Length: 581
Image (cartoon, rainbow, N blue to C red; front, side, top):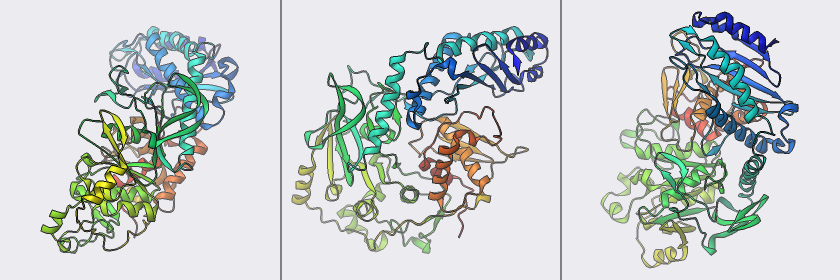
């Protein structure tokens, strides 16, 4: 292994030469308190940044072992350290040092959610940060002295500031890890408590703006306060402050299994609650406001998606007898309607194991959700191929164990099928279940239930892996996360704008490579088995396996862990996907 002096000598030697001479830097260098790995050097100043790793021995980092004992705490500590490195970069680095990406230094840092990432690894032997680096150039001429400042001075200071226990805020680090540990503990208790979600008293659900995921200031926000009839208490692993006192349990609103309606006037907080619940499948950073809004990991947000592709999904429980005899037991289309897309999304989610559906009337197809008595009188059932969701939602729970949380402000027909009705008024929740049930008894709608046969169980489709081709031009693998909502996969673009529980472009990137990995391994079985095997692979081998060129030690790229549901959703939206007979 070369030394830091060797690194300086190389930089002096190549100073002023053409940019490609930076390739001489690749390799490992021993610094006094860490090892620097330069795994990839960019081809020019405008190319994707270079990739480096900074590995600090455990004897130098001195991280307390209890902070990374078990997967949950390890992921939390890694996320905390990523944020520390990010802040250190902001304070230490001088920024732009030439053209293109010159002077860039970055780590793949997240937002309000805590996700497993490849950007940081903590083991009992070492702590390793994986960074992106823009090697400086003037034109395409190497600026060796500025590169030396980045690699031999700034990296040293970043490691000292952010990767050693004596340098970080110990109290804040422990609070961060314990908070995530508590959230995952609550999530693990939901099923036994008969709940699909929990919202702690005092939670701040509104965000500061449509462009920010940070919470609204406490002075402007209405803290969540649970109606007594919906109040539950859940024990914690670590004490927290609630209502000005330290407690080993949290009180809040338990969202029960079954059918829950969230009702109320416009702009009173219905969709805000649902948005918090859909994000509650992830743990959140302390002081997010939603850190103790916890939802079962098997909850999936469903919406209408006009124009999406569908491949051989049995939607006949919701839609059949289409004009011209179009088949719906194995329904395929390149241009779905609102109703067919929503039906397919429900069945695709259940196919891979969803036990809770989250829906908002604002993003649903009206004709899929309900047909009122007047429309039934005008358009007879024999001319209407859709069985509305209102007539299947109870059956989904009672026959298939799938609960639903539904925001509904415009249709009282759902009072007949709801177990719980929670009204939002001025961002305050009220239990109005008894009133809704009384109204349903007194004001009968006389609408007819339109189910003609039971909702069949969902089968498991088997992909034809040859229909997944990530190649483009001369490249065998060309996969790119264009945003949180889009993956360039070979010649195709997978539109994920309707997959609302994705929160980070690094998740989207991971999904693209997960699809490629699954096809390369020719994973057998149906979709549920495939995505569960993929998740098990992540558990066993980590996200580094998503690097298509993974062999030995190297920077794997910037990946954040997706759920099985979003992996399956992306596969289902790939327009080249073919399902075997």
